[in-house]
Length: 385
Image (cartoon, rainbow, N blue to C red):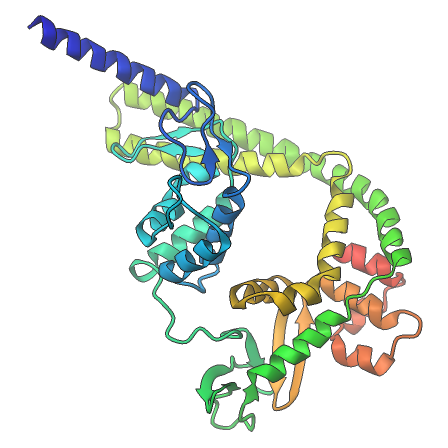
């Protein structure tokens, strides 16, 4: 009896300590993949080697382009390993993609309870939710039968329908299956070569880069002023969510709601709180943030051709989804439309002194209403950012 009572008391003390850490926002167990342990009583920290790979896993799976097995193989090639140095298998990868620890929340696998963590998130909440949507569709993402490079990325220039990839005689062709459409097919090499030419035109001179830096200082002040009202609204919303959390806890303690409903409502409110905190952090721009943001886009534009040319199919698809808004093909003709600010950068290149106007017109599709604005090409580029 004495021994049993001692063990029972010891178990209760361990439980109190365990939940005490959780209420402090500290995960008292081993760090998941992408994080490192700092010792007892300290929050987990991001692993500088594996955290970027974990984020890439979420981004690639959210795009809906790969199966879990394909993603596991790709991450293994990139160097993602478990703590023992083994390959991250499909089951482990699925657990990672469902784990809210990577957005700053702690969920206990056994009880389903969720706590707000104080560790640094690896991914934003919006990305985590997109991954959950992909996982929930048809019981999870199914492997693609044919994973062509431009699958669902190229449209027919005449009828605007998506071209469908087919493999014929060792080559991949993208064909329009509309019966009345005269477009018979475009080879993948033709589309890829044309896109490579487009990306090769991103050649900014040092004076243009310097002009962008000077313009960014003035724009950053305007951005800060516009964010003040938004920050106030976010603070009010965040206080509302915290108040609702307190009321929910009171209702549970008063036995007004059962445990399962309490867990579900608490998790939903913690997700909302995490979202608002992310928006609040994003709205509080540090000094020089916008200028660094502009320079990051400029560096990405400079290295666009090299990144696309040396990337694997998954990386190329990510670049195309980030940079291109539409790709139209008709026989041997391929027209690429770009997202902002890449379209403004390319437009600036087409208007630069010594540029071939015919070549610029073919390489860029620009709205005439935008072109009528009395702005310099670099100012248009910055406005696009």
